[in-house]
Image (tube, rainbow, N blue to C red; front, side, top):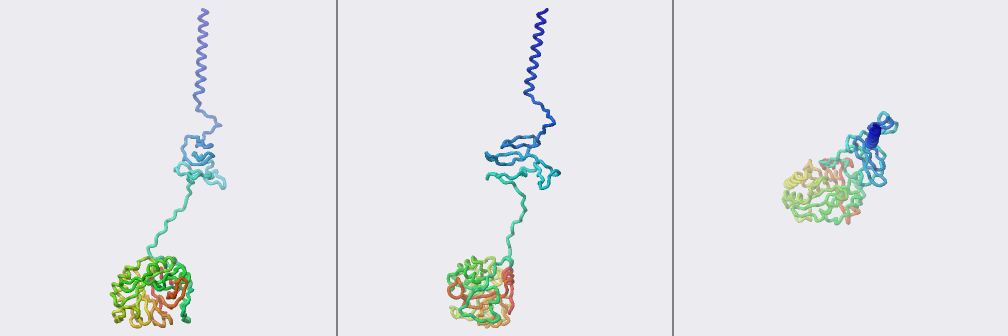
Length: 376
């Protein structure tokens, strides 16, 4: 009886010991899901020294820099809401709207490989190209006249110096031109000899055409008309050699009697007007600008009095004002000297002036050169 009692006691002790050891192991391996009121579970990731502590919320990844280089971290949730923000504090932006959202932290020094935070910018429409001639306000500044004259004329109160916009006309006879110096002397525009008759091109035309434009002068081309050639052939020759470009001055037909020309023919007034009309019509269709008529006193007296009232005229008058040499004729340009002197040109040069002030010059340019002048 006593032995079984001892055995029973031993067996009972062993059972109790086994239960205690199992409970201790379970306590170490199974943490409790409960938390005390003193512990607050964070609502976002917390970054520390380049290490990411993840929470149940998913946030946008933001690049930052640390001592060891660039690392990534999850931005923390804002500490202030709109209602609790103090004076001077910016309202935090909500997260989770897009991957591009960034935290409103002081910007660290970012490495080159890291994109800076995107800031809102005003939307600006791209500039539109002008499909019409540039408006008058876009014309270049007018340079004051500083030309000299080898044979100065006293025009009195009608002096061309009272007009604002001066220019020149040139051909191969002026040789190599320094267009920048000529511009500085007061040449705001230049009419450049292009063609004669139906087969001659001024050898300096292309160089002068490019040089005048590069120096900022308004440029145009003129054709010396031969009375021994068909008018349409001469128009075709001019069109073949003079480019059609935006901003160019209207083309010019130069009509005069020239004793030095190989063509000494002097057709009737009716034939002169007919030939001129054919030539000008063809140029106007091609360039979209009404041609300007350049002439001299004797040719005008023989052929052009009262003719072409709807065309602009460029008049040669080197001894008196155009109103005295061409009474009643409206004019656009006045060639007032054939003996001008200027830096940038060797020898003499023809001097011209626009009939109007600077505002009228800009208006005329803005309209593509389509305007008539007064007769005074």
